[in-house]
Image 1 (spheres, one colour):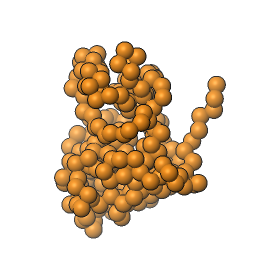
Image 2 (cartoon, helix red, strand yellow):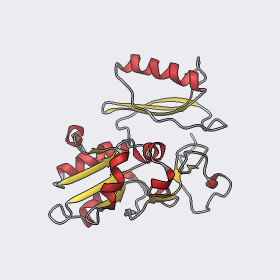
Image 3 (cartoon, rainbow, N blue to C red):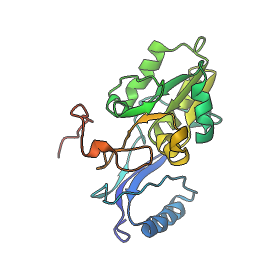
Length: 227
């Protein structure tokens, strides 16, 4: 990361790895190749462009979980639940489909899909209790879920399958992939998408949103105490 002036964070855990990084296009391509060789895999990644660096430091963190659900999950249960951007509109336009936003309340506040349920949670690990208290596998047969980049759904979709829900769909690549692949005139996304960097949010064209210049006072993501 130092050699190629890459900034951002890489998370590594037994269940996998995830990163959000920034740099010049040619350096990012070189770094992706290094990552693929290091992890012996083919990475699936999303790109967007911004005039300024959204990250200031380079960080690599070893964690117990990529995203903390605090519940054991068999990731393989999620096989067959992934839904491409091109099929997403049809699924969530079905009146029998429950559309579940798996993100935290301060993220949902900036934007979400038309008709989506806001679980009004403060942290991802609260989502399990919300589903248990509000949904019944015998009654709610079709649930489509989404998150920013698809990572949270990679864990929660398998859990929903384990809980007995019959038809579970997760938006592959998350909101960011959907916005990248879906023409604006066909998009069912409303508002902006919260991102965890200095941009604060991106619009339907994955460009810095208006939130940058006019940040709502109610946007209060959890802050870590300085050490």
